[in-house]
Image 1 (cartoon, rainbow, N blue to C red):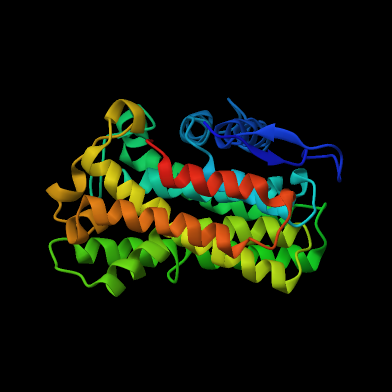
Image 2 (image 1 turned 60 degrees about the vertical axis):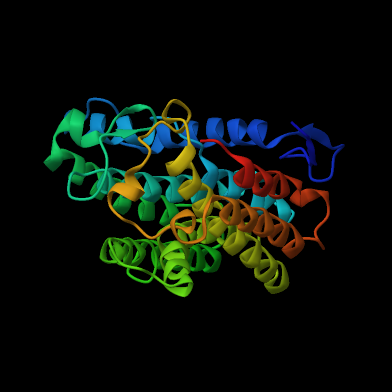
Length: 310
């Protein structure tokens, strides 16, 4: 795998080191999982079964792409990635809550990240409540972040709330459900993807950048990067549902065709979808072309999104 150069996370301009996307994802995962372990309900506690259900899903592995993007965006704006850890944790908590609810029998699947989904282990009622707990505690984590000035903190909360709400993830999920069995146009399909998947990726990047004090120009460029990376992620996800290996993806395949969902492969075919994903990677890289090596983690992550197999 080709390596990308990135500044050492706490160096403030110290000698560069060589990392690749997988390495950066592992480092980001370790940081955010340590942080989550501290802030999530402790094992035992007043309601031990709820704590167990929350920790089962939130600490159950995964790519941790959204946290990595938040940390990478902070670095791209000249900040230490630690400043974006609360953002990284909060978006992962919201992402995890969405997966718990998305996996419920009313919507999706029995396996996630290679393990039985929350409702298969804890029952539907507790799974729903564990998701609720993660969603609400995410905003507690953001609000309690004393390392970020209050005005930045408020802006981040607004970004994340909008991404998770009716104009973002939840609205996209509803539009996705309503689109099952229908012949959607490309604008309708991109509307769904920009909300169901792209909104939280956009909030991850913007939140990390805001935490680091990004200028308006840098925030605009990073937003374009995130929009293209988010759409690429979903197109590749659609491709993996057609031709992915369940052992690698950690979840079943063929669900989209079973539910007659409109996807890029279903509408445009495999080859055209691969081509569009590759174009989006190049567009994401072009959006941050004016950034220096401090943005190399984001470049590596965009390339990873375009070629991932899980």
